[in-house]
Image 1 (cartoon, rainbow, N blue to C red):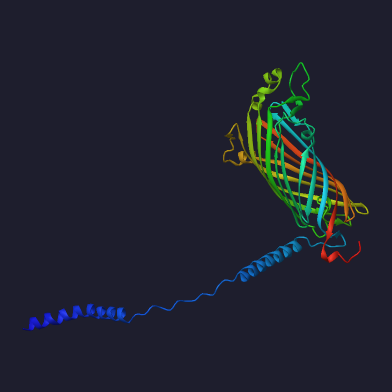
Image 2 (image 1 turned 60 degrees about the vertical axis):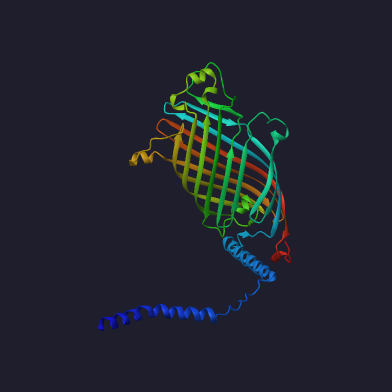
Length: 386
């Protein structure tokens, strides 16, 4: 009897939770009501457009503040740009030269015909955009040659400058000079279609005395240098060089004497350099400016010849062999009365590549002659006389 009572109590204890939950479920199913719909505020189109406008205004104000900080100058030395827009006509000539050398003193130099272009440019404050045309193509003299390509972007602010460039040569090279060949004929200026190159890179540099010294005054005509002044410059550069060389297209007697170290078909190298230099703006007459700047650079180069990496190793002496020297040269002369301007500028890049059995020095540059005018005066200068 006691066992039966104990079993009854135990069964009741185990069944109680199930009964309780069944009762709860029954109560929920009987007494449940559908929840009232939740209302969400509608997003009005006017609110959306107002938010977009405020975001654009906020971004524009931020960009404007950054621009002011980057272009703060001492106005006794530099007059800021008074206009928003500019128009410019330009004639540019592109120059290239490549010298290949061997460890036994033999060398070959190649250079293409100088490439002259006419361009039309439209500028907004810091940035110039436009289009240029090769005169040889316009005259129909470059149809049988591989086309050249040049893409250049320059940004000059008071504190720093940036150059982005891509250059691809054509196929109209000539043998400009050579050494240590015993030849029966002079091959100087002989056309040579077995050489091509392309270069892409970035130059960035900082101007220490930016409140008194203006690069834009010499190279982008967006400011005016009023007093002569110079500045220490420092920069970083990165570039990739791809050279293809078909030595079998050389004249027969030159090819037969060619040094084995010059018998390659491709050279690719990457160049990293750090530069420190100096620039000077000379105001030699009213509204007239002459600029000269030099930036020597210590460069580290990694290369592949015939698609094979060069033997650099891990020792200190072998790593040192990958260090060479580069040079960036700039010169410019301009007359600018804030409204109208005319001038010329030269920018020259020189890269030196050396290995125990092989060396190459390649340089390229541009000479620009331009004239133009500024218009649409900024709001803060509209009520002021020139």
